[in-house]
Image (cartoon, rainbow, N blue to C red; front, side, top):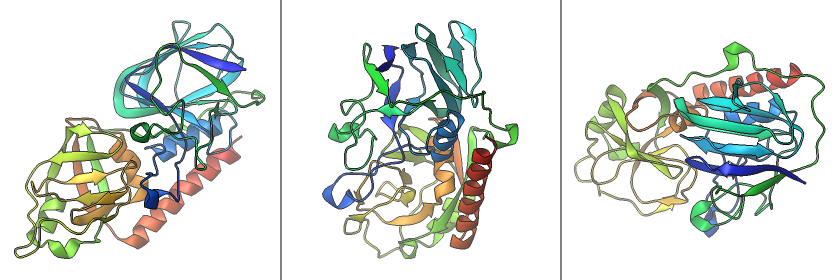
Length: 312
């Protein structure tokens, strides 16, 4: 049974889950949501398992006609949202019914929002994931972003007994100056003064910022004298900070499999969501951290998610 019809698709709206793991050696990237915390909260708010498929909405939201009674929740970037022309709040579950019109407008802060629906979106599971890889035309809804007239289904699920909402202190803020923690390596030995530069100055997010990676602009990060300008291509991971020949950093995200430039540092997993919520013109300032701190922060985030589950 259909759940919604797309009246207007928004800027770039795709079906995503946590990602497609185990196929990078075949050239298939992980894909998946860019803000895992907001994604997980959205599913919890409508009573789903953590990894049910949602809509990832970028910059401008869609307009949707509801065709099935269900609960929905929008988390992530702050975006105006109306149900039948009446404002409704984010980070809360909302009951919708057939004939309702849900309209999500332009971002006010952040970059990406996540719309979860009761049961999760029903699309084919490709290589163990519902995620869309637009570059490879696989996964999600027909391997592409949504278009006007698309009709999407959800898995069967009951509605909630009562509404759910996220505690205010759990809701992230998305400032235009993001402080991002990173661990040195794996090729930090290619740099000397460049390491000092990376952590001492801010870098602007350029217009070349998408699901593949974020190109930044700021003070040049030179490779150490005598070292080659590139390395033998090797497997990459989300968060790697590459330094190409133009000496401007690139933060790799979820639609990469290999990289051929030295990686000065790696953004920790809990801060990748912060990177993905910045927009062109925003500033990223890197802070040096270590693996022990990264593990602690990850554990704290998981504890927060578990506490949210236990609220309901």
